[in-house]
Length: 181
Image (cartoon, one colour):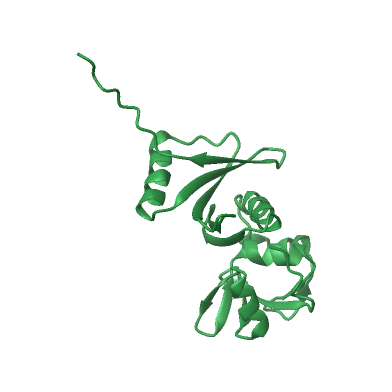
């Protein structure tokens, strides 16, 4: 979803220990929360690192670090707080950005896992995987089972080594064969 309504610069405070951003409760924070950014904890809207980076990439946010300095670009945040970024950051940001640009409400649930409201209003879990990552059948089964337990659809977002995205809807299959006598 585009951020047209956010004309003024959104000021995000960054906590280097938790590697999360936050805004104190305000009309701006409420608007972000309504657009599925962050989660309120008491009177603070807490943003995941991927959400902070996405907002920086839109040029509609600036991040105030705990040393008082300000950052306006993702690359600058990486230079100053590199320890916050792990190997899953870029694939997650690529998928988050793609989904947001497609107008999907997207919430970061966990590392490599998003909750997304699709065009029909249905909720789905999206798991981010990198190309050439080995994944066993039990892991796939666990992903499908988690979605089924929560009455959600599930999609794998595969990020290629070149950064291209491919989405695969995953559905449980019943491969049992009825015996014919």
